[in-house]
Length: 154
Image 1 (cartoon, rainbow, N blue to C red):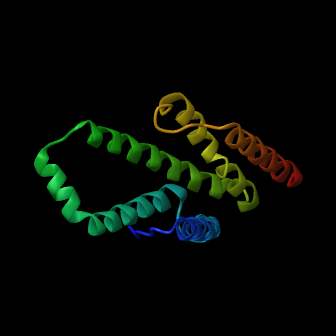
Image 2: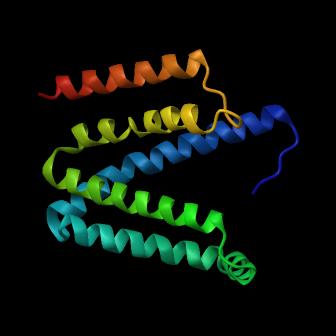
Image 3: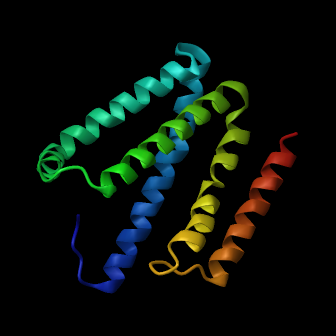
């Protein structure tokens, strides 16, 4: 992790990382559509994608995982397993959606996923994170934008 002490530089680094993330996630939808449209069925694409992701994470964090396993399984590992299962289901449904619908419909609908995070944060992480009125208003705007994109493409 990059350590930046200056608050303005930290903010700019955060914005840059967010924009980079958006560019990567936006281009992934196009690549995913090409894969399920021409090369592989959705579930094969899911299996390959999850396997490649797991291999990359294993290489990057091998030493950390090895030291954590020595300490024994804990509740954190159970939560990690549940997060992995949720991710696998999400990737599976994403590839299935790309196989059935155009990218211009799938991408905005998948973009609503942060709303699920906001709702779950409000209910389960109230001591760690605060959901403000600005966050709720932003979420409502996201839903409105997704509705407009989806209805405009009909």
